[in-house]
Length: 92
Image 1 (cartoon, helix red, strand yellow):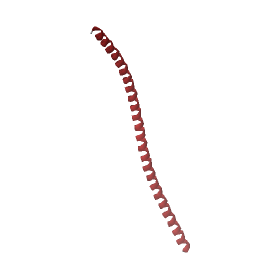
Image 2: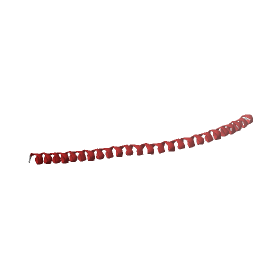
Image 3: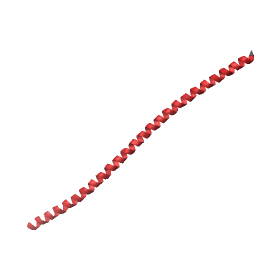
Image 4: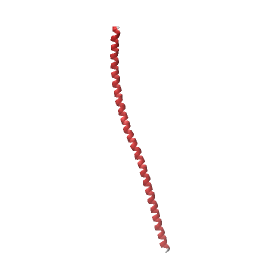
């Protein structure tokens, strides 16, 4: 009778231990999933910002080209104005 009670207590102890292990495992899986979700969300933000930086760089390069074209046009205009003023000065 004592051996049967000892075996019964051992079996119950195994089930209690197994239940605790399963609960901890599920809790760890839940925590890991939440952590991975946060990491993925942060990575998505970084990827999005990288694309934004590329767009800004492209726009900046385009504006640089436009400024260069405007400067050369301005130089040409300035030369024509100087030439016109030189003609007016000669007439006066």
